[in-house]
Length: 188
Image (tube, rainbow, N blue to C red; front, side, top):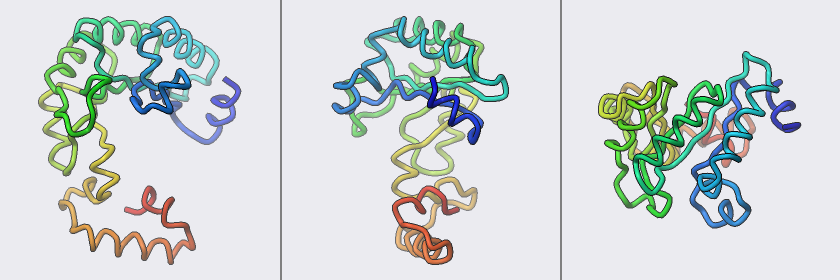
């Protein structure tokens, strides 16, 4: 809680990633390990919402549970905590990026709550943002791997070739005297 209180002085939203399926997250009881502990999820989100200023949003990201019905029940419990929104990654915990995202399951979650839902999974080009929103009914969409591979997916003009993207990132590094590993998240 103390970290969130400190961070909220500089950010508009505190987000809890409850969907990371990687071993280091699960082994520590974080990420997708939280999906097996709905009471802990409720406690975390309720505590954040109760203690942070009202102008600071509280969100979380989950993955699909063993069944869509279980995911819907968790989504409804999350909504009751007062979060501003939550993201649903359209893969089950055991699935990896090579497995297609289940946009149909995200749609069922969206239809079960009134809280804004952010759809996630298989967004690689600018047009995918609208496709996933239309397909799922989600209020918004997010990208991970697509944005890591080429940040120009956020451009309405379309993605630029990777080599040109790299050139632009390197130019920003030089202009800003900034490390390349951080600049990739800041360049536009």
